[in-house]
Length: 302
Image (cartoon, rainbow, N blue to C red):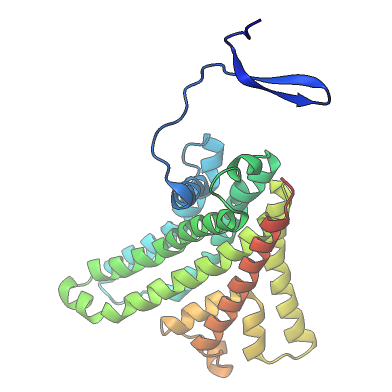
């Protein structure tokens, strides 16, 4: 007796019963295969879009739009004030930027779980990891997407100040030539801020599938660091040079003051650590957080 046409020619015997694989006639994929690099690019681009809520409901865009708009307003107001005073009021980069650090924290705390916690919550990791994606490459692609998004958010207010200072000058071409060296601190400040926020937020978000818990842990860690720094200063008499490096938010604000050549009365009485010390601490924080992220993704149950 001949076998039905819908069955394949081979049958597999398991436990004494015949198991048959049916050919339902689905068309096989014969298009280009991008491999591991293509998978990395896809994860990066999808994560980058997720950070800003692109392709998602309007509720997912609320925090990114709020942070971007609100963080830009003080920069625009400062530029308008400097232009109205015809240069009599100096443009304070650090003073404006330090006030935005909490907004950057809100952005990273709200959006990092949208990438990492959401994938675990909806159990899509098994689908992502079935092809040319390793756990390490998945973690690094998500981290790269978050760092890029954070860099743009952290850079935007500084870039508005930089371009605005040139635009309101009496002779913009001469001001641009004189300010050529200031673009370095602008890029360095945005890079370091994005590095700290993205790595710490990604590491904590990867530890839980619940987005609310991840958001709370990210904000809580930064606030606890601030409380510890204040406690060590007031109760233990820790030197100011050390205390400045314990609190990431305060360290970023102080670094901005140093990079842009601004100062306060407190900084004159207690000089802050050198720029190299800040960079070293931020690199250590980023390296440690990245290690935690990769370690967690290698061990998460899928």
